[in-house]
Amino acid sequence: MAKKVVATLKTGTGKSFTKVIKMVKSDKTGAYVFKTDIVPNEQVKDFFAKK
Image (cartoon, rainbow, N blue to C red; front, top):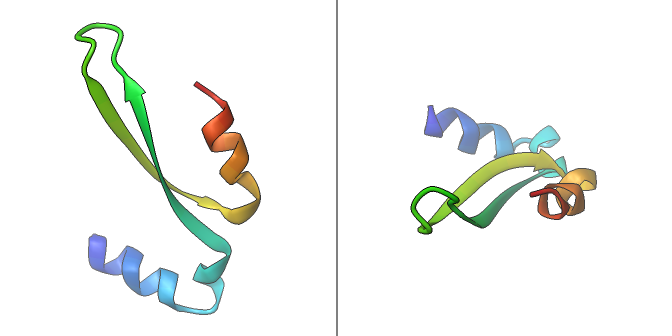
């Protein structure tokens, strides 16, 4: 699965996407969890703005 994502991002259409990583504190345990996602370049600020 990871190979497909990396191969897709190297093509011409994949350059319009960004992999984002956000650190979120868990309500149950209080530990930090990392959320990763691949979003279009226009939606990067929206990804970090929402909780």
